[in-house]
Structure formats: structure tokens, C-alpha cells
Length: 220
Image 1 (cartoon, rainbow, N blue to C red):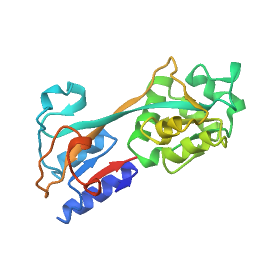
Image 2 (tube, helix red, strand yellow):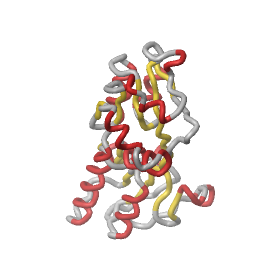
Image 3 (cartoon, helix red, strand yellow):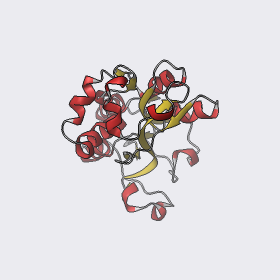
């Protein structure tokens, strides 16, 4: 199953506490929530054979290993936004001309959205969020529909997770491009954790487990 991180966390916790876990593996897009599951003993320890190949910032030894990671950056529709209108910085997104023309997801979905808004506060200044709110961004329930709104030309710009519809739409030839801006690009690991009640042989990544897709949970 797939769900935004906040809802997936709640479901994992509820099922584990009831001893009715439905999945073998969970991949969530927030390290803090992974730690919360570990602290509450709602996942079990595991170590893949390739554990030593993971960098220190992509694992909690014996507990979780990054199945993937995601960059958070703005994208734009190259047919709607061109030339001098293309934003050159995060602050350019605050230009009044973009009011109502930026899509993203709300902080309430958790996971990657937390990283996005945390970056805005810590790296762009305490007032950035207030100014961004004035832009009246279109808030979608996940990043995928935000990407689609740009790909379809319904919105000029979106702030998205790279692990979304973005790569698919690029392969399909959608008129979208990324903005890698000088203030920085947020990044988050996607921790992979083991169910406390299932006993399976784990390898280094979800793509190599041999587990049925129905047994792997992914947050979006």
C-alpha cells in the first residue's frame, strides 16, 4: 500500500500495537518518524548483508537503512514560464506575480513535506513561511497531483519531492524542468524498517528483496 507519511505512520503504529501487522517492510520518508517507531519498539532490528556499504548518514545501524532518498525542489512548466521569468532563487518565488500560481503539498502530510517547510524556516528565514503563505499556494493532498498540475499547464510552478510523478512525466516528455536554486536543495532519507511480527530475509533495498509489492509500504 502507499500513503502519505503521516497516515502511514499511524497505520503502522496501530497495526503493530494490535499485533495485526499487514506488511513485512515499511519505507517512510521521515527519519524522525522512523526513530519514533523504533523508540516505541514497533519495528524490529535487522541488518542487510550490504550494511557496510551504506554511508553513516543513510542508516541507523541495525535498525533502518535508506531504501532511497528524495530531493525537494521547485519545478516549472517551460511553456508557461520562460526567459527572465524563470525564478533564480527561493526568494524569487515570493514575487507577487506568482501569487496563486505555485503548487505544493501542506506540512500536514508529514515526511518530505516536513523537510520542505523545515528548510524554508531554517535556511530562508523565519519570515519566509509567512511571505510564502501570502502567495496563496495551491495545496494538494500529496506531491503527485502538484506535479501533474504543472505538467498539464494548470500551474506554472510547484515545489515537489523528486520521488513523485516528476520522473515519470519527464520520461513522457512533459514540458517541465527543475530549479536547483543557490540557497540549497532539501534532502531527506527514506528509511526502510522491518515489521515486528514478520520473519523474512532482508536484503539491501526494497527493489532487491524479492518480496511481493503488496508487502512493501511506501509513503509519498
